[in-house]
Length: 211
Image (cartoon, rainbow, N blue to C red; front, side, top):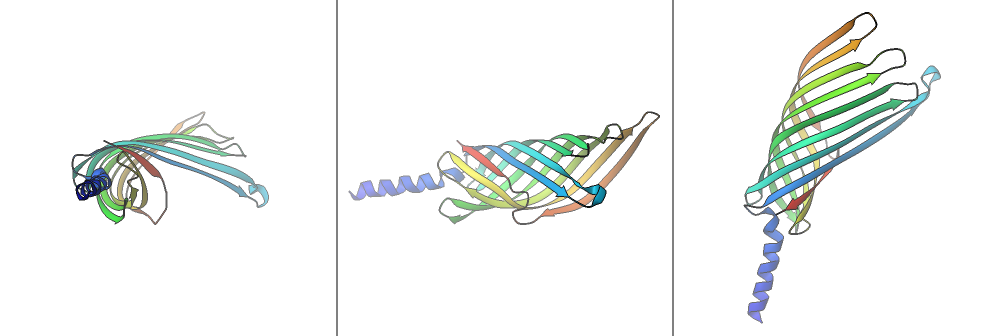
């Protein structure tokens, strides 16, 4: 009886710790869906507009040691803006990053994590207003950042993860083209800045398949 009890305890402990042990692989799918509708009034400015951004990520990581994961991630986003006065914008973006995450146990299967990443991002947005042609904006972005959040290792095969805060150093190059009937204007800009997102800003989640 004592032997069976010890075996049961060992199995339970291995089940709880399996997800974060060295050699485990994690295939992740991330989803972030945002939709904002704004109504405004004030004489000629009366109207409404709607912003929608749908972002998806696919990543692979490997626990190179207990509670430490090295991974690569690819992302795709679709952006739409529409207002009742005829202004419209449509954009797409893609990118990727290499990342490292360290996990810290909090309560049973709930873990906090902190990580760093190096990434690349590209986007193209075309906009139209009722009195003019399409404007095109293209941007290439390179970033180095730190971030953190929570992970719930639900079982031996699944985990849920959310990003709660982050800080990034970003270098970007932007090109904007505005054609008309007579000429085409171009504007180019280079930016270097530091951005941060506070607690529970830009909340999204990832689902991991562990194997």
